[in-house]
Length: 420
Image 1 (cartoon, one colour):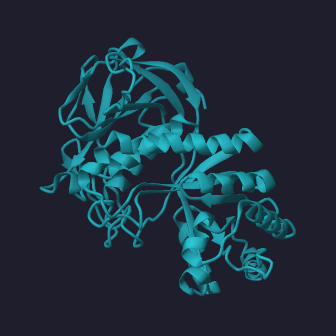
Image 2 (image 1 turned 90 degrees about the vertical axis):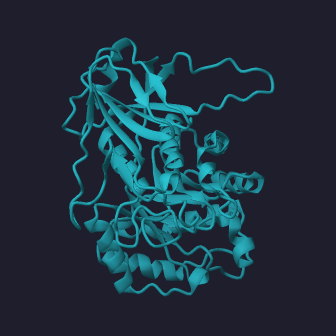
Image 3 (image 1 turned 30 degrees about the horizontal axis):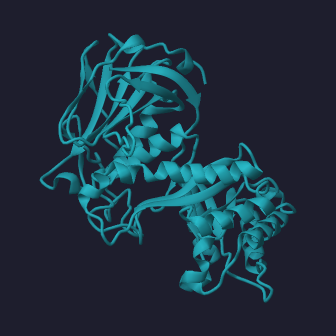
């Protein structure tokens, strides 16, 4: 039995594009024409571009050499490109990957230097600056973040970090159903928040890179239906803990954590993200599930295989009046589960958007079906209509085994959801 208890506000944004070019990484020379194409793609797609400058160009004293960056800034300003900025990527790995190290204090000074470059340029005097884009918060990474925040915490508009769930060399489809794996994110959020709040309480924190597996993912798994359990749980967990922006590592081509395939056909995580943006609003609602919460015993960790998140329904979705709420439910059990709505949710009409794998590959499928109908593009530029399945008022929700679904409870008239 499920009912709403309280609400808290946050907002989950998914549509950001980040790009980094670095001579040290790949000997790639970024031409003006390349930057023009990149910016035009982002602009035409309704995306905002965050450009990560090369942090590995160093002076003899290990300070950042900003000469190339300044040239790029001046060119971008001449074109009036609306860009946000960042410096480097996973600085904790510089020594291992490139034979040179930058500690948190020096990186903080580098960010202050970048800020000083932006301020005289009129179009970028108020441009957003993000960083330090660290990797998973192990002990050495936390030390780097601590040094950075002490020096430059007030300089950045949001503190950024990355999370990788699984070692790609050992992954298999069933790994994506492990609750222990899904819960690793929560502990890492707390570690990051502790450091950030020590120096800049209330500073925004973004998860700037989230991948299911390391080394760009695992072929035929990271872009399958199975990986969607981690992705959807990530969105719910981040919103619950106040993280309001998450950025995908890759949309196309690089690695295997794709949103579209080589022919630009949407993959399972694309459809999950599409439904999320269509149905989920900025306010998070806490839920209580009677019969699910169990009293912990010494030495026993309770890891729920039925995960339920609740938000106000998006105000941008004109199919639903304000005051409606949307649940999204992850069932990791190998049996179906039944949920009876209680309290103010009782006797309300529900629209079901149930996502299941399509085809013979099961969890490894690259295609999904919505309420039993396969989701495919109508043509190269037209997405299909996302048709819900109406469930009569008071009906018990039946969640099939190993599935994900969105459930809009219509006309609840929830006070928290009636206003922006």
